[in-house]
Structures are given as structure tokens and as C-alpha cells.
Image (cartoon, rainbow, N blue to C red):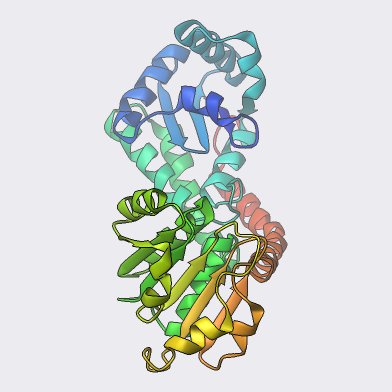
Length: 336
């Protein structure tokens, strides 16, 4: 029996192609059984996330199985010929190694991310319950999970946040100790503001206030975030209450001046205030940072911190690959 993997991901296929092959979480087991039957093999697992769909199979001849699978998919889905250009095809040891890299977060859009580990485990369990795995894929996936844990415990592949939103949230936690019950004001209703605010909420932020020149846009984002819309003329009043301000208005000049913050310091009882300025041009006058209890980070500083984290993670790849190679030697699957 030989291993194979047919897949596409964020590097090889645009979202409009990936979504054609996406499989819902509650259908992974049935999809695994269907793919195995389509390729006429006894074992199959389907991994499907927003960034990838991969078919893992075990059959008598990896190359012949790949051909049957592609022909079957093409006929079933009525695929255009050019779609095949988006797939990668891996056989034997290459397929096993790829799975270990996926589970370890080395093949992810965000290097070292942890969510993929749980997603692959869920896909494997669904296939197991559907009866579409056997001795080959069981051993492969169990070894891959062991490798993923080893990579994360013995390297620093997860060290530091690599997105601007998460860097900002990490800094906020350092300032406040924790974000439980903290209050956030979003100044401007852009996508980066939304993403950063969602990160803050996921770490415990309690209240979200949204203000925007278009009150309708503010209401829309506030509704999505479970927060409250504030008219743009009233944002200074809200400044008295909040702990974090995320600003991204697209205005051609600074919106928040030092005098605005000085006016509310006494009402705030001089509590720490964290500004995340992700606007270009900047929304917040740099002089605001001169106030004792105020912390101000602009998008360049946040991007620099994120890039430093990405560089640190990149340095860990060699060590991760060494662990994967050593563990795969122990697996000793037939056909690898």
C-alpha cells in the first residue's frame, strides 16, 4: 500500500477555486468515504479548511490512484481543464512529510499557527468514525499529531504574533495585565479596525464603541461586534470611559490631538490609555504619546514588531524540518 496526497491551498489556488472543493465540518466523514470510493482504494481522509483542501489516500499504486482520483473528480465536478493546474500531487514519503508540515503549522499562511492542528485532527476523527481509514492512514495521522506536538514543544515556531492585529492585542495585554472587562473604542469603521477589535474581544474585552463619520457604517460595525454606535461628534465623551482606542478613519489629518486627551485625564483618574493608530495618514498626533499614562503605537511600529516575529519563526524552520525527518524515519510505512 502506498500513500498519496492530492491538494490545493492558498499558495496554489485563489479563493474562488478553493471554495469549489471546500467540505463542511459535518461532512468530512462522508467526503472521506466518497473520495476513497472514487479512487477505488480502502483508505481516505479529507482535510478541508478556508486555506486548503487535501485528499489523503492509501492504495496499491500511488501514481495510478492519483490518476483515478483526478479523473473521478473531474467527471463528478465537471471541472475545467485548467483547474488541474492548481493541484499539487505528492506520493509516498513526500505525502507523509507534507502532512507532518501541515500539522506542525509550517505550510500555513501564518507560520506556526496552531488552529490547523485541531482542524486536521477533526478531519481524521471524522474519517475514522466513517470507517474510511485503515492501518496505513491511522499510523500516518497518529504519527503526524505526535510530530506536531513535538515541533511546538521543542522549537519556538509559535513565538511572537505575526499579524498587526494580534501584535496590538499582545501589547495591550502587556500594558493592562489582562483585557478582561476592558472597553474599546473604534474610530473609523474599516476592515483593519474590525479585525483588531475582534482580536481584543477574543482576549476578553467587554465593551465596544464604534464611531464613524457615517453613523450608518458605525451602526453596522457595532451590530456585527455586539457593541454600541456613537455619533462622530461624541467620541471625546466616550474617551473618558475606554481603555483602548483603535483608529483608522482615512482622514487627511490628525483626528485626536494631545489637548483632546489632556481634557479627559482627570475624569479618567489618570488610568492607562492605549492608542492603536492603523491609519495612513496617521489619525493620532504623535505628541499624545508624551502623556505619562498614554501608550501610542502606529502601523509602522506594529508592522515592524510583526516582521520581527515572522523572522524569528523563519529561523526555527530548519529545526522543525529536522524533527519531522527523524520522526518519519521511525514511521517506516510501506511505500515510503
